[in-house]
Image (cartoon, rainbow, N blue to C red; front, side, top):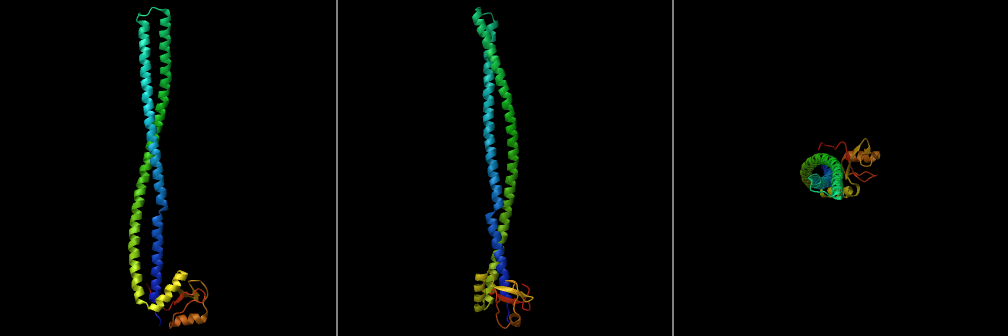
Amino acid sequence: MLDLSSLWKLEKNHESLYSMKNEMKLLQERTEFHKLEKKCQELEERHENLLIKMKEVRLHLRKLEQEVDTHKEKSRMAELTLYNGSVKDLKQLEHLEKEKEYHRNLIDVLEDKIIDSMGISEDTESRIDEIYRLLSESKGDLVEKQNLIDESSAKLKNGMEVLEKTIENLEGEIDGARLSKYNDIRKRKGSGIAEMKNDVCNGCHMHIPEKIVEKARQGKAVVTCENCGRILYGVLEQEDI
């Protein structure tokens, strides 16, 4: 009997290696990882912009408070001069009264602005806390996903090394002409050998003529599918890998 089990094992190992290479490619593309990475970058930018805004709001608040203190002092001085009896001129008294009222009105306006700014400050601080929370969670997810990717990559790399060594060993066991024929078919078709089951080639899923089935089952020569050209591996020759 012609032993095709080594070729069949070789095919299965090539399939596993191909699958692992695709998994590695997907890991390297890391579409979800890059989305999460982009999300972190966007959150960092928003967090930084909010911190800048908070700094500006606080500076504005301090400026308003300083202006209020300045106008309070000017109002106090006008009131002190107005009532200490040092000024006797009626026009000057009227001017001091207007000046005191002017500063008082400005103080009211500024204090309203302070209240508004404090509201903006509280809202901005709340948004900073929320963005920081989201950023911390996203960074944690990013680290966790990176660790999983690294772990998976290491496992795939080790697995591929084992398969490549197994393929090399199997190729050393197979007749050179048969291996060359298999590799040529595999290069053109993607797989070099196909299981023949229930008179059907599992490579192209086409029915195999009875004379080809019988010839393949006799195991006296390498038989290929008339439709796809793959080497046929009859169920009688199949062994566990």
